[in-house]
Structure formats: structure tokens, C-alpha cells
Image (cartoon, rainbow, N blue to C red; front, side, top):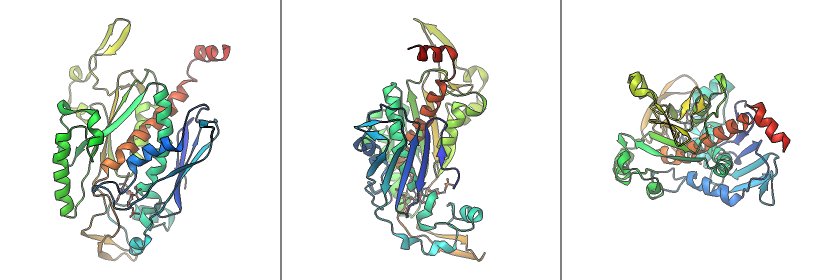
Length: 366
Ligand SMILES: Cc1cc2nc3c(=O)[nH]c(=O)nc-3n(C[C@H](O)[C@H](O)[C@H](O)COP(=O)(O)O)c2cc1C
Ligand SMILES: C=C(O[C@@H]1CC(C(=O)O)=C[C@@H](OP(=O)(O)O)[C@H]1O)C(=O)O
């Protein structure tokens, strides 16, 4: 299948299906000398793995990662890094019926239209399980960013109609909220709302917000490889993401110019902006202020309710979906969004190193 590789200099290729033997990733283009271990990558996978809270799919997977190549004596060697997570608790019998019909809100119809048949077990390649591989790769990108003092933090901004109050926002709270909300008051309300909808056999969506601090100005390539364009592509490639915004995003369409422009200011040798409606990106390049983006996540498609659909014989039918599903995808996708943002930033930071002759000369002189 084409389309499984992301990046120009920091290239990531994921493989595997939800009910196949395992999920994996090859990261090519990682600079040599980065300290990496399976234990470190595991800390990121543990934030995503299924079966951890009552708001997650009951499918339990350990998601243990094994590094197969590219790391020697604890450091990256500059060669391709291959990582694998074996699937342990596939229950493909849940899916024997869906081979013959198309689940609403899933990729069944489109995969069949494209390829003529599909791996229908657990959504196959279109499953959210594929994001395991993205998080393993993202952990490497995040380590590179950390070494440059660039930090990426995502959290749940809203669940259904409940949005965090920014005056209560405390990023230290995220790990205390089972929904990864940095406002514990909003988190409690969101849990009540979610439990109510779960009792009605329904699912809920929400918004993930991501903030990048420490990004130098000028990162992003002009025209087709803009930073915001690449971030949009990376984030929108995650299953169930239906909307993407940078800075004031869609709200900026109803603002006036004097309110939307961020005035520049110079003091004590530093140029900064008085506001950040642009979300840290101007002309497709980072402007040195925080990058702020949001991803809208739809409510989980698989719900335990009778639904109308069509089968392969083009008959209108009623279905009742089986399986172990996330009643909400948002909390599990928070670390996936962080990973996709990190992969994009590292790729563009590496590309930027070729942008100026004076810098190249400086590098090769030493
Ligand atoms: C981490 C994660 C977990 C997911 N879990 C489920 C799930 O349990 N049930 C489900 O119906 N969809 C789940 N999804 C979303 C579907 O995979 C996705 O909606 C589907 O493949 C159709 O793609 P689209 O929504 O991008 O059009 C999950 C997505 C992610 C990123
Ligand atoms: C297993 C994971 O999530 C799965 C994502 C998913 C989907 O349709 O996207 C459907 C469910 O899969 P299955 O029916 O195969 O159990 C989830 O459990 C995971 O994220 O690791």
C-alpha cells in the first residue's frame, strides 16, 4: 500500500494491521548519537495503549516495543531504526460478519472500493491500532526535540460540549485526569457527560490542543512544504481527526484585521509578538512564539446500537456491531497528536539545515 511513509529527511514508514501479527515502524534519517532505549519508548506507548481506563476499549494489549535495528550501546547509529509491537489479544471472530457489510463511519466501503477486498479484522490497516507505530517513532522525534529545548505538549481541550476553562489550566493536572484534561473541574464534568452517553450506548468526540514551546523562528519550507501545511497533513492523517486549526483558526475568519494581527515588539535585544493569534506560524514558517494547534476528533464510529447500512449484495440491512471499542478516542489520541507534531517538526528542522550557504560553510569549516 502506498501512502505509509511520512517525511523527507526524517522518514517514518509504518506497517501492520489491528488483527495481524503485529504493528511496526521503520525510522530512517535519525541522526547518530541520540540516546534511546526500549524503556524510554515504552513510556510513550503506555500513554496510548488500550484497556487502561473505563473510557478505553476493553481490548487489553501490553504494547511492548522491541527495537530490532539502528541502536547500538544505547545510541542511534544513523542507520534505519526498526521497531515492532506484537499484537497479543486479537479476537477476530467479532469481525466475521462485517466482511459482508460496511460499518457506518468506518473505512470498510472505501477500502473495498479501492482494492476490491480488505482485511476486515478490526479495521485492518485503517484501525486506530496503527497509531502504536506512530507513537514509537514520535518518541524518537520527541527526544531529538528535547535535546534542542523544544517541547511538545498535547492535552484534551474539550469532550463533547465541555471545554476547559483556561483560568484553571494547569498542565501538571493532565496525568491526574483520566481524560488528559488540564482543568480537573472540566474533567469531572466531562466524565459525567461521557458516562451518561456510554450508558445510552453512544460515543463522544472532542478536541485535542497541542502547544510547542522553544521553536526557533524560520522553520518550514516555502510554498508546498509550509510548516502549517505539513502539520495539518500529519495530524489529519490520524484516523477520526475531522478538523485542524492553527492559532485562532476558524475564529479568525470572523475577526477584523486590527484584532487578528499580532504586533511585533523589540526589547532587550529580543523581537517578540504582543499577541499570538497566528499560533506561532507566519508564511508557513515558525515565528519564534509558541505553536498552538487543535485537532477535532469525531465520536467513535462503532457504537452498540442498531444502525442502517448496506451489504456487499447492495441490500439495505440493519446491523449491531460487536467488538471492543473506545467510547471516546480523544484521551488515547493525545500522545498520537504529540507524536505527529514532533515528527513534522524534526523533519523540517533537519531540512532547514540546508537553507543557508553561510551556515553550511560554517559547519564544514570545523
Ligand atoms: C487511538 C485511536 C483509537 C481508535 N479506536 C476506535 C475504536 O475503538 N472504534 C472505532 O470505531 N474507531 C476507533 N478509532 C477511529 C477509527 O479507526 C476511524 O474513525 C476509522 O478508521 C475511519 O477513519 P476516519 O474517521 O478518519 O474517516 C480510533 C482511532 C484512534 C486514533
Ligand atoms: C486495539 C486498539 O484500538 C482498536 C481501534 C479500533 C478501530 O476501529 O480503530 C477498534 C478496536 O479494535 P478491535 O475491535 O480490533 O479490538 C480498538 O480496540 C489500539 O488502539 O491499540
